[in-house]
Length: 382
Image (tube, rainbow, N blue to C red; front, side):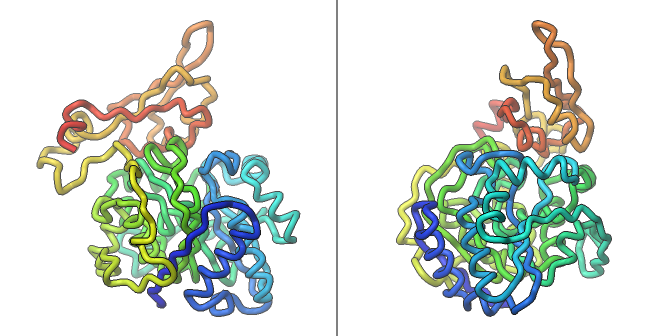
C-alpha cells in the first residue's frame, strides 16, 4: 500500500476551486488512473449520517463528491454514490437524505448513479481481531472499487470521524445498533472499526476538510474552517495526518489507538510522507475536541460503573426535544422512552443505568435536543 498522504489547501466550496484541489490531491498520490480502470463500478462511499443540508457541515459536501465523480468518469469508471445513513436501510428513508445533502443534485448534474441497492451480504473475515464475519450492504460488495469520502469532524464516542470511521456506514441500517451494543466500550468499538477497514480495504480516501466540525461532533458541533483536502490510499495514515492537523492527540482517537496496537501505524506524522502543503502551512487554533471521554492515560483506575458515573459525559434531553422518537429508534440498548411532557407533548427520557454512552441519540437527533454533560469531577480531571 502507498502510505503517502496529500495535503492541499482549499478554502471554498466553489466548484471550480474544489475540482482543481481534488485533482491535485489525487494526482499527488498517483492520479485517479492508479485507482480506477475503465468500466469499473466505483462506489463513492460518502458520509451522510442523517438528513442535513450541506451548510450544516455534517455530510461530505456535494462539491467534493462532484469533483471525485468527474475524475472517476475521466478514468472511464462508473461512479456510484452511496451510504447507509443512520436509520432504516430502505428507499423511503434514504431518499430524503440524498435530496437534502445535495447528493441527488450531484447525480443529476453529472450522470453519476445513486445507489438504491438495499441488499445485505455476510462476509467472512478470518483475520479480523474482534469480528470474524461482517454483515455489509451489497451496494459495497457489488462495487469493483471503493473510494471513501469522509468529512473531517469530531466524534463524541470515537473522538474523531475520519476515513476509518466513515466505513462504519457499510454496515446496513439498524444493523449498526447491534454492533454498538456488542462493542459498547470505545476501545472495542475502535478495534472493530479497524476490522471493517481491513475487510473493505478502500482503494483511496479523499477527505473533505474544507470546513470541518469541532466540539460536539459528528452532528451537533460547530463549523470549523480547516481549509484542507487530504487524499491517501492508506486510510489510517490519512487519519493520523488529519487529526494532527487540527491539533488532536492521536492516542485519544480510539480507531488510531487500535491501529497502533496492531502495528498498522506508529501514529507519528514524521513516519509518513506528506506531499503537497506542509502541516506547518496551516495555522489552526481553537479546534475543540469532544468533552466526552477521559483519556485512558489520565483516567484513574476505577471500575466501569464509577467511570461512567464520575468521568464520562451523559446524554440528557434538553428543552428542544419535540418527542419525534428518532433517538428511541436509534438507541442500541433501548434505554430511551417517550414520556408525557408539558402541554400534552412527548419528550425523551434516558435510563442512564442502561445507557452505555455510545451517543447515537446525540448523533441522530435532528433538533440538537441531546446535550452531553460531563460530571464536575470528570471536567476537573480531564
